[in-house]
Length: 134
Image: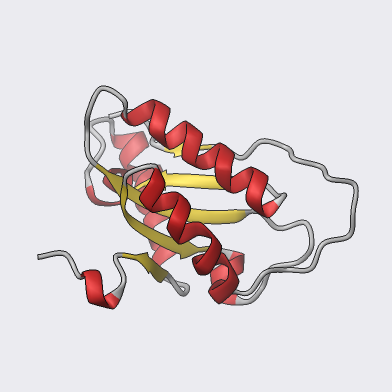
């Protein structure tokens, strides 16, 4: 399995920006997630933990069906989020969190990442409580 982290790209709007709250992020991200077929979406990192500043990116864990258009849908989702928030977006495939890597070094890196992510708040955006997966 290749690392399923889509790195952030620089997005410099040249303006001073306020740091969005986790609630603001969820409200804005949820419709885009639905539009692009994202089944599960979680906020993590500095935005979820309240440690963000004006230069912070927004980190998401996502899950979506594996189909021929998956890569395109995820790239378009990331682009839509970047445009909507005016800041860098990192997307981590939930499979990367839950599935072991074959190479020992890659697995060690994955486990360190998972330990770091799970040691801080992770906020569920999708599914919502009334859309709970069965």
